[in-house]
Image (cartoon, rainbow, N blue to C red; front, top):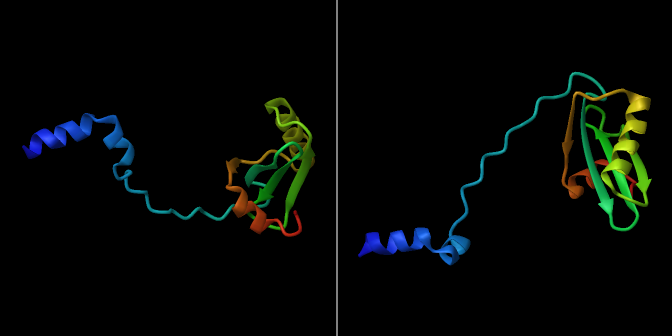
Length: 109
């Protein structure tokens, strides 16, 4: 009987929705960047008028932000190209949760 119930639950869509999620992976620390403007975090904030924020992991106070009225991929790419033309191309770009970036960029809001 137990095996029948277990098999039913494994095949039941509703049972899978309320089942325990897979265990989360442990957090891993990142290595400190070798220099400025090598590893960046990027994210968008806002709705109709958005802010594109770019933060340097090496110097957290080294950040750029661009106000956008439209967040199409073409507009975001053009804005990033402008930022990179001033500072050079990074080695890595990661996307951060907005709350993390807001703590790292004082006076943004």
